[in-house]
Image (cartoon, rainbow, N blue to C red):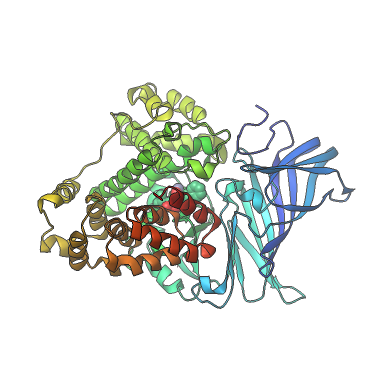
Length: 592
Ligand code: BES
Ligand code: ZN
């Protein structure tokens, strides 16, 4: 196949980039990056080279030491962007492209000082997964190509740059700016390229782990994630030595559209994880687990996304089980089940998006995103584990990671490997039903515990007057309360909401999973006392996982629909482009 990835112009018969050298000038006034990208090839190449770009202004293309060479920018495809076709001279080793990013580049969010914690300096962060790297750097923007990189990032004085790479030094420039240098020696897919610039400080958490944040939140972040070294050790116990040298984390401003992003050596995290009680560190376990499942062994494209996320969710809950026990893991699976059911309902008219092995020619990866590759994928992994036994499965996983380390693979490659190493297991769990058929197989594993059953029975008895006892109210951990709220009926009355708020003090919760689950119930009940909190959360937080259900629940009543439109009009300039798109689609589905 000349073009193995439907989301990239990459042509496998052409030279393949092996190394990237970047010079990036960050211009906050213009909201643009002035860039030079030098793409080094694995071996000398000639003729056409097709690269992915989207919204980039190409200024020149040349072979270093030789001068300009011909290039041509194709028409804009709404999903793929513009193909940049370069004509390489014979035996070119590398090609240099000078370019500028567009102010609305999807990979980049430029924040005004008011959108940060300190409110005194602007902030920039990138989010390249799935296919937004091409709005930041011209490249072969497909995980089938892996590159090592080095970068030089020039930023205004007083600001700090971090990347998904190791720092190799920084200095003042003659014009009073600051240049930060980075190196990522291991080969990574383009979606793991990452940059953030802001007023940043760091705290060491262990000899190989550190957390970065704005000075105002760095202490809180250091406290919340203090247990990270322990997590790394537990993960190493499962998967073998940590392969990326350092594990640093960056806590971003609240508009960051995801909970976490596994950028190697620098996981990006939403500040909504700073609950004040370490109750949301499962997201760190997840991003850390990607160091093996995703970053070391990578999906060959979005059609195989479950290989990244399904394995990582399984790994996250495995780490959770070691750290906090069987019950805690069962609660994690229960929360996942809820997310899975919601995604299956959302895609009920697009069953082709509920299979694990997806077919996405012509489909925007961001539109195909859901909890299905995560939770259906994790259930397939768990089914295989149950089939062959825990020990044998772990041994298999280690072999899998050894065999495919630093490569990007397809579902078919995984199946071939699993069939060879675990003969009969795929058939025994009916893997085809997960991979190729919509919905959930009837034989999917279930995860139960006494505690989970208690919470379920109690929540289901709500309509018959069942209420938690004062002892339960006082003793539930955040994860128990969350599962209880998730299992309550969706059509509570105003009086029901008042009871819940009075007994659980929900409005003031620092755990955003609980807060947003509660506000979603309250929004659906047209519960006016929650409106100002809903407005506050929707204005401050850009995490899509929260925006979708909350705006969705506001669609239930005429009064809350008006509220939602009003909040969106005021808040959307502060949202990330991805978040804005998601909310728009939710609002468009409202009744008139
Ligand atoms: N890699 C994902 C985030 C992502 C997925 C970004 C697809 C862009 C496109 C990350 O590892 C993730 O899954 N984050 C979750 C956390 C979780 C499941 C614990 C999130 O953001 O909520
Ligand atoms: Zn993930």
